[in-house]
Structures are given as C-alpha cells and as structure tokens.
Length: 243
Length: 243
Image 1 (spheres, rainbow over the protein chains, first blue to last red):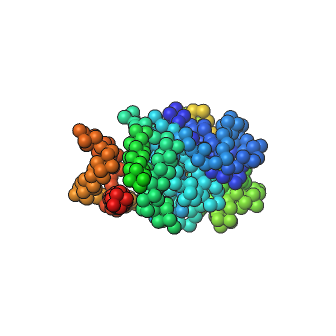
Image 2: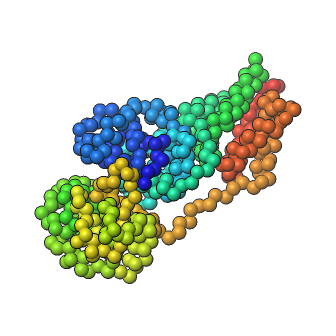
Image 3: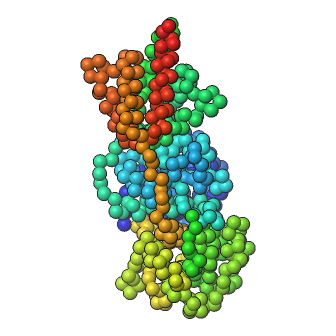
C-alpha cells in the first residue's frame, strides 16, 4: 500500500526529548510520512534521535528541518492541524483523528499540510493554536489523558494513512498559504483597532472568532485578496475623511 | 469518556526490552486497558519499565502478571486476537484493526479477550498464532513495515477504545437563520457601496464572492452579530469623521 502523503509534514514545536523525536520519525515513516520539522529545539541530541528511530528510519531523522520560530516553520503550509488534550472554549472546535483524516487526505492533494504537536509536558498553547485551521483531540480514558508524543503522532498518522488508502479524487480547492492569511489577520486587526472595535485589553478576543469562522470555510488565495482589498479601501476611506 | 474494557488484556509474548513494556503500559492505560500479561520474560528490568511508563501508569506496571508458558497465560481467555506484520497464506485470514475493534468490544461484554503481541524483532510465530481466533495486521507504508511494539499496541487499543465509545453526540452547530444572514449581507453591501468598493454597474459581483465564502463556513448566529457589529462600527466611524 502506497499512500500519497508527500505533502504532509509533522511539525514538532519545542520537543523536550530527542528520543521522542526519533520515535516520531519511525512512527511517521511507518505511515508514509517522511517530512519532519523541529521548531525551537535546534540543540537536540541527534545521536539519541537516531538510536530511537532505529536504522530503519534514520534517513527520516537525517533530513529533519530545524526552525527557530513557529511562523517561519509554518509559513509555507496551506493547512495546519493542531493537536491538544486540553479542552477549552477558546481553543476548539475539536475534531476526532478519524474526522480530520479524510479532510487532510483530500486537502493534501493540492496543498501542503502540517500536523503540529506541542511539547511533551504542556502541549500547544493558545499562541500556537492560533495558526491552526483545525484542532484534533485524541480520545482517551479519563484515567490517563496524557499520551506520549510518538503515540499521539502514530495515531493521527495511522488514521490519515488508513483514509488515504480508500480516498477518492474530487475537486480539491487550493487554499491560501499561512503567510497570506496571517498578513490578512494582521491587517484586519489594525483596522479594527483603528476604528475602536477591539478591546485594547483583549484585542485577540474578536480576532479569534473571525479566525474560527474563516478556518471553517478554508480561505482561498483570491478570497484573502478580496478581504485585504476591502480593508485597504476602508483604511483609505477613513484616512481620507480625516484630512 | 469511559470505555468498558475491563475484560480486555494485553499479552506480550517474550518482549525483549523493558522500556517497551513500560511504554505499552502507558499506551494501554490511555485507552482504558489496564491488564498486562508478560510471557516468557520474567527477568525484565522493572525499574526501566516504570521509568518509561511514567509515574502516570506505574500502577499498571506494578500489577503486570508474569507467566512462563503461553498456554498458561492464555488458558483463562475466551477470545484471542493475534497481531502480525508477516503475511502468509497459513497465517491468515488477516483483519484490519478497525474491523476487529467492533468485534472485540462486543465479545468482551461477556468474554475475556487477549490481544497478543510477539517479540520486537520476530513477531509471533505460527506456533503462537495457533491460539488466536483472529489475526490483525496494522496497515503500513511499504517503506517501513516494522512498527514499534508500543506503537502497535496503542493503534489496536485506540481502535477498540474508539469503537467502545457509544455514538458520540458531536455538537451539530445551530446555524444562523436566512433572515439573519440576509440582513447582514444587506448591511455589508451598503457599507461597501458607501466606501466606493463596489462597482455600481455590477454591485453583486464582490458580494457573491463573500456569500460563497460565508456559505462554505456555515455562519452561526453569534458570528452574524459580530460581523454586523463590525459593520456598524465602520459606518459610525465613517459618518463621525465626516461631520
């Protein structure tokens, strides 16, 4: 069975243990995913990584890409899936691995998809989840919710692999890049601050609602351009009236 | 989520690495399975096991049952599921983790079920598979078929746990009424006309793009209110600046 998973990458944000990164490399390769990015942890023990990946997946470890900052790491992806076990109103909506798998398989035919995992102890914070178009929660027993990093990776990758075996070809839209949408959010935020719509104490509150809405839709490049055009016109209009 | 998995046990036949047994304990507990049996490996390093299980699953490690012989270990089970990545005519028929999961959940309501895993390097031989009522194969990429022991365990247990959760009542969102969204579109159109964004010859051209975008997302009532609030503030701002 050969999956079409070359457009899918695992992005590990600030992992703490090199051994876990090695285990992740093997798990991902088992499920046909060979691109791994490590963010904010450039000084890891690569020998330990190679040991735990076993010689079977050492090639995946050797081509890991390292980034300092998360926005740099995610900038060239079109669709970003976060993972969390911490539920909270502002963090959702949460999707099961099975539900996201089919979506990821379809979207990844024409788009670059990142599967984003947080540090072993704390997971992803709201700062990182902001970048995500969807947030996955792996169902667990109440008695032990904390899943080992490589275990979480292999469950999500397994679901995607299983979905890729049966998936059918359909019209898959080409989504906007993360750097395009982030630029748009920055412009909207500036505009809404200018007109006094955002609460200066918590400017991200309304922005989060807009992000959820746009993420559900899956923004296309030309839609980002339209929205930015509207914002530009509004800014010009506001400025013009002032002078 | 509480699974009914007390009748299910993990049976590890001649595992080689204590660390893997510890990882299996944590993985199984994540998925609501807390009975682990180790066969033919009584002299394992239990300290290493505890370390890898983390303190969160050390209770599972502490109550591991040890047997010398496989027939003794399996004697009190009603249904035994073997696992293998080595396919062969005499070894099958092979079932997917998803297909076996539903069966295991049903059977385990009134029967003791063992999930049997072989040694890390060789897996189960035909001698052990003889005991099995069904044999599961986890689908993998051709490029790397060999799965880490705890990874194989968590995939099978995850499928069983997912099957054990009764049809989830995943919140179906309550969408905005047509009269709410139409009111919003009217307001946006007026605003965009005011600021000179819409072509007077064909004012609906850009509106159509916005409708497509919002329809894809499926607008909620509160999101309509947020967008109308932004429009109102923009109108007020524009008007205020004029006078």
